[in-house]
Image (cartoon, rainbow, N blue to C red; front, side):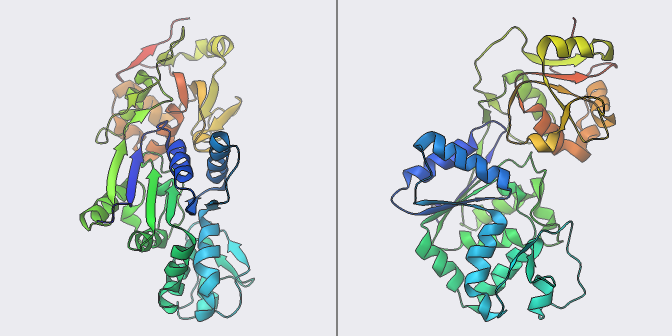
Length: 357
């Protein structure tokens, strides 16, 4: 096994961004790279490093994932397969569909403006690695002793193959993510489809058996009180349960069902952040979609229901939220002290009590 390679699956609120920032800072004077799918997450990492160190030191480079692929895998050696410098990135909506053979590199990997399709960038980078006879990885090894990948569960398609290439290289690799928060995906291509989301556990286990990495779990939360952790974990009963490290107590802690007639009173009294699955629900409320609050935390959360949540609360059967399990988990685990669902029916879900004004 390459002992410096590891994949850590963390519960929501486990402090994975702090772990990455702390470990990266500790590796100075060696140079390291940190990459994550979204620009928002990259900025969150940058802020954490500044908070811990006062600035981002010259030894640490932070990339959004597509930027990393384009700048460090494709452009340096694209001349082996495509003579014209790739102009930028064409952000694909869904899986790119072009009736072009892969041998036609310019048209398969790039649009008419010579912007590379985002969901094919990983495959493009792998092509450059093969065509250059390994120069892509050797160059990365000269630049960085270690590469950190945050929100690793977002990787999909050929991006998973890029990660395996890095795991097999002399470069140390540390990956952190939460397979219960798979609300984004770097690619919607059919490649590695079964390893997306929670399927990434299987891929990680395969890599561990092959001696490419260690796999660990951070099953704790510094954000949510234990009651909130317990309810959120009911969505994924086969995954490790989170232990709360939030010891703060207020006069209103826990998970509640709030009747519709009491919702305005609840809002007035506790000023919770209102969350919803998407804009179809809570149209007249100042609500945010679950997925848009990923990485954030709020003292209190009030959740606008939809059919799946209503049935889950009434029966206790998590199958009712299976189609949007990741989004619901994100919504619940944004809260430090209290979560409330607007709900008028019976409550069979363990850990949820009816709010009495």
